[in-house]
Image (cartoon, rainbow, N blue to C red):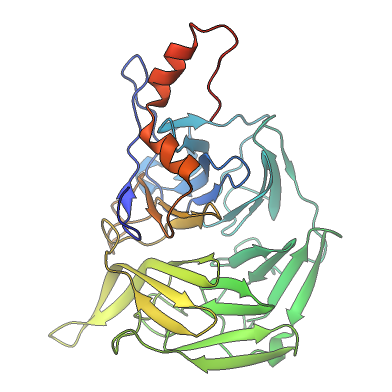
Length: 371
């Protein structure tokens, strides 16, 4: 078993013909772990300007729906009945086995705000939403998180004097406002991160543009849904250090902690000029003690506009993103790190050669391998 909190690439295996199926390198994808079967990571959409004129993309935006089996180490294309939506900077959440909710961040070749997708049948359908807080189809930089049947969203358009947080209630299929705009004491943010814990909605990072006005992480703001008020809390550093302000990062909840990874920031160089910088650090934030801790190992390389999720049991996954500040190099790699010691079942499956075992069991009547 590898060391905890150490991210490593999950390299896809070739099939019996020597072919290796991999996703297109993209920024702004969305991933969702299969928390029911604990065996896969689904990846949806993304963007790569180097592939503007292909059958698989529209203007560089991809409609790829793929799944990585963490035991067989293979990518497979998931079925889609009808037209595949082209999505980028969106969010994906597993609702039940084979059922996913895709909330559209940047509106790219789609007129829907959200989709319901069944990976078992391939059926994808529009989610009818009333009273959507979007003002137009060019909304950009939303942050979204799903918690107890509610999809919390902060609108992300810096051109609109709007910083309200809304939620979409999956039980009644309607939007509701968590707090009115004139009560919000923070400026509109592009690509912050939202985490819900103990009836409090935390906001991590984000900014107003790519060169300035990024939200710091020394002081964290959260909205207490019990008292209906905003609270600012001073956080505790890790040996005197705090994470740098950033946007286009990920902050992934797991238990009572949130794991912040990568992102984009600006630093002042020796000539006192602002220099865009891509980050590869990983931090944990304790939502009970408000304490930061930097993990010993950084990501395999700096990345922003990636996505991250956990399987809810032990492991965190990171997929895609941009590897430079000039938006030239995109990633198709899937990384994983154990946040706690995995179960014996998971460790056993990792050690087993699934393909070899399957071939052996084919010759035994009534036996097959389920994973």
